[in-house]
Amino acid sequence: MSELLGVAVLGAGHMGADHVRRLDRVVSGARVAAVADPDTGRAEEAVAGVDGASVHAEAAAALDAPGVEAVLIASPGPAHEEALLEAFARGLPVLCEKPLVPESAGALRVMEAEVRLGRRLAQVGFMRRYDAEYLRLKSLLDGGRLGRPLMLHCTHRNVFSPPDFTSAMLVNSSVSHEIDAARWLLGQELTAVTVLRPRSSSSAPEGLVDPQFVLFETAGGALVDVEVFVNCGFGYQVACEAVCEAGSARIGDERSLAVTTADGRHEEVARDYLVRFADAYDREVQAWVDATRAGRVTGPGVWDGYAASAVAEAGVRALESGGRVAVELVPRPDLYA
Image (spheres, rainbow, N blue to C red):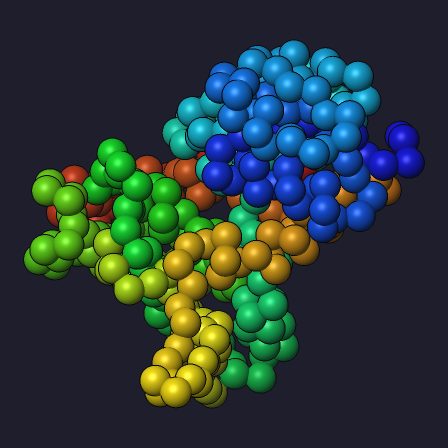
């Protein structure tokens, strides 16, 4: 491995361009070796000022570019399966933004491919596991001071939804982070989903069921509820409260900046996830680079990505049917034990 880990970034959109910036200016021990995007003009813009980064229209060409030793996938979800399998075929370590693969069947194919390799190569980008507040909550729950967890109350609000955002995407895109966070915080699989549909906000685009109230059951008997509201209009807000037998703990209320001027005092609320979780993304990518350079794979893996996709699929069926839907998972392979 070279002195600086050569990374191919697949996708040069909002997320991919931010990762190019992060690898080039924030993270130590790595460099951007190649960027791939069907829109090569967008890729050129992302690498402007980045020394030695080649630009490609096809993902496979970027993986084969000189100096590439690892891959960061930030392309749209439907492109992930092919990119992951191409990376596995080359033995390249991967950090894949969520979702691993949108459909659980595709995620299962990726998992089977990694199992055949006999070693982990992929980490999934569930960055909340690297957020300082979430880490404090995880430590508190694992330490047992609050007793056995009974419930998690979660909030996930966006200022507005992107164009063509669907009602199903509130569950399989937005709530996917809560799915992984709940599994990680509680150390339990999610076993069933119910989705309730309050009256849609007048701010929601026509036909979009927004907000939604998602209720998860866990293998350990806990309940997890998520209020997801992607057109709230006033800020990007993520919060989580753990209610346990001997106490409770809440995160997500201390992220605003209080500003005082002659006009009075007000709080600035983050407008998107790249602001709210900027530090988490930095820590996540740095941890991935450090582990990769040491020949290790850490953090959430392919099993976690598969489980999240399976739970999200059950959630979409619950939204569409109006009833409770059980989550079905294949047996967990020994590789992920």
